[in-house]
Amino acid sequence: MCLQDKKIRACIFDMDGVLVNTEKYHFMAWQRLTETLGFTIDEKFNENLKGVSRSVCVDLILKHGGLTKTQEEKNALAAQKNEWFLEFVKTEVTPANVYPGVLDFLHSLKSKGYKTAVGSASKNTMLLLNKLEIIQYFDAIVDGNMIEKAKPNPEVFLKGAELLNVRPCECVVFEDAYSGVEAAKNGGMYCIGVGSPEVLSKADFCIRTFMEMNVERLKEL
Figure 1 (cartoon, rainbow, N blue to C red):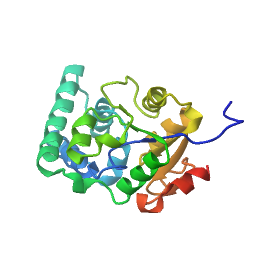
Figure 2: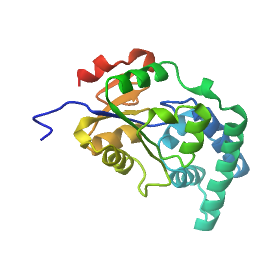
Figure 3: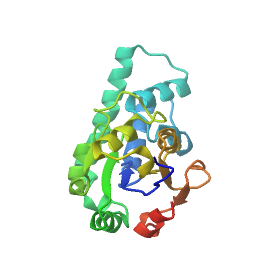
């Protein structure tokens, strides 16, 4: 039982805003989309779009703008946003977009025998990991093509634990979004927030960057 053995054996990472600086490209694509709908969004509202699926984002945006669309129209909006986002990815994303400290931490985890996974709602996860040249660091990858339920449902992280063959309580999740922190806790996992402790208040503790993270801090859990 986990109460008898609380050892952390695996780390599961959200991608956008945690491993890589692509959040600005999502924001720019969503802003461009809302402008075509006759309104706009700011960075504060964009916090609601972090860590959740594209379809959920469309619903939140339409509600914010007071608009109603058919499912077919929603699908078209989601596809258009993704097209604009991929334009940014293909032209601007390089290994330099990996956040400082991430590679050193991943190297350390692998050398110490920890299992690692990515758990992301993004359907572009594989493309981004290859562009960033970090896919080799992960034993399992769960993306938006493999799950049905959006965060704060823990499906994405529970699937990651399953693929790693570890119990949820043996995992620590790294998340930058409130909904992602909730998902980790709903799944019975530890969670380290990457960002503001005021925003990520349900995390077990927070770091600002991976420059603050090492294997010894995992043992504190």
